[in-house]
Amino acid sequence: MSNWDWFLDGWIVLAGALCAAASALLGNFLVLRRMTLLGDAITHAVLPGLAIAFFLSESRSSLPMFVGAVVAGALTTVFTEWIRRYGRVDEGASMGVVFTSLFALGLVMIVRAADRVDLDADCVLYGAIELTPYDPIAVLGIEVPRAVATLGAVTLVNAAFVLSFFKELKISSFDPALSTTAGFPAGVMHLALMVLVAVTAVASFESVGSVLVVAMFVVPPAAAYLLTDRLAVMVGLSVLLAVLSAGLGHVAALEVPGWFGLRSATTAGMMAVAAGALLVLCLIFSPRHGLLTRAWRRRRLSRRVVADDVLALLYRLRERADEGEEPGPADPRTLRKILGASRVAFPRTLRDLRRRRLIRKTAAGVTLTPAGAELAGGVVRSHRLWEEYLATHADRPPEEVHATAHRLEHFTDRRLRDALDAATDAPATDPHGAPIPPEPPSSR
Image 1 (cartoon, helix red, strand yellow):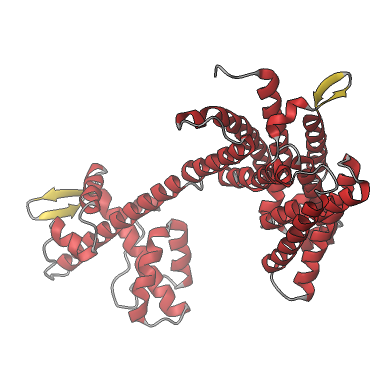
Image 2 (cartoon, rainbow, N blue to C red; image 1 turned 180 degrees about the horizontal axis):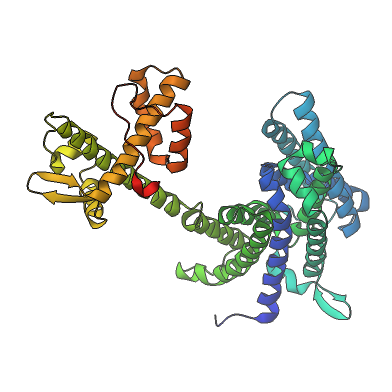
C-alpha cells in the first residue's frame, strides 16, 4: 500500500483495535447470556445521559459524559428488568420498549443540545476515527491520540474485570441461580457487566461511533463461538478476531473503494464489514459448527445409513434363501428401488462397499462377503433387538416398531446391543417372529 502512513494509519488501526478488543471482551458474556440486544440497547440508550451531561456542563468534558453514560446504562438495565418482571413480557419485548424510548428521547435531546454546545450527532453515530491522530495528549511524556489513551484504559479495565471475575461471569452466564447460591450474586455481576458495556460504548462514541462498537460487542464473540466450545479460548479468539477486523477494515477502507472508482470509505464502517466477513468465513469453514463441516457430516451419515441398509437387505434376502423361500434378484437396480435410494449416491455406495470387501458382484447380482455378513448381522441384530425392546418396554404395537427401530439401528454399538439383550431377557425372535442373529464373532 503506497499511501500507507504509519503516523496516521497506525494510530487509526490501534484505536479501532482497542475499541474492538474492549467490546469483544464483554461481548462474549452478552452472547452467552443471549443478551446481545441489550448491549445494542445500552449503546443507544446512553444518549439521554450524554445529552443531560451536555445540558448541565455546557461542555464535552469526559467526566460528565462518563457519569451520564453510566447512569443511563444502569437505568437501561434496571428498566428492562423492571418491565420484564412486572409487565410480564419476555426480555426481548422489554428491551425493545426501553431501547426505542430512550434512544428517541436521546436523539431529541441531542438535537436540542446541539444548539448550545459543540456536538455533532453524526459523530456519535458514525464516529471520526480518521481524525484520531490529530487530537493528542501527553501520557507519561509521550504524545498519543486522546482516543487511543481512553480506549486503552477501557480495554485494560475490561480485561482486568474479565480476568478477575472470570469464574463468577462464567457461572452467572450459564446458571444464574447456581451463581447466587454459591455466593456470587448474579444480579450484581449482571449490573457490573452492563455498566462496563455503557462505559465502553461512551468511550467509543466520539472516536469510532456506536455502529462499530455495537458490531464488536456481537460479531467477534459470535464468530469465536463457532470455533470453540471452551469459554477461555472463545474469549481469546474473539479478541484476536476483533483486532484482525480493525486492521483489515482500515486496509479495506483505503483500498477497496478504488476498485470501484471511489475515493474512500468510512473506516469504522469497513471495520464492521470486515468483522462480518470473518463471521461469514467462520460460519462456513468452522471445523465443528461450519456449514461445510455439517454438510459433510450429513453426507457421511447418509452414506453410512445407505450402506447399512444395503447390507441389512442382503442379509434378509439370504435368510429367505436359507429358509427355502425365493429371495428375489439382488441386482443393484432392484436393491436401489427397494431401498428408495438416490440414483447418483447408490452406485457410489456399492463401490465403497466393494472397496471395503463387504460385498462382491456375481453373475446373479450382489452378495455379501464373510466380513459383510458379520457387519450386516450386527445391523439386523440391532434392529430386531430394538423392535423387541419397543414392543415389550414401550408398549408399542408390533406393526409400529419397525420405523423407529430402523432409525435407531444405525447408532447402536455392541455395548448398547448387550444392554438391549439383557433388558429383553435375550430373546430368540423379534415381535414379528424373525430370528434375532447372534452377536457377530468380530465384536465379541
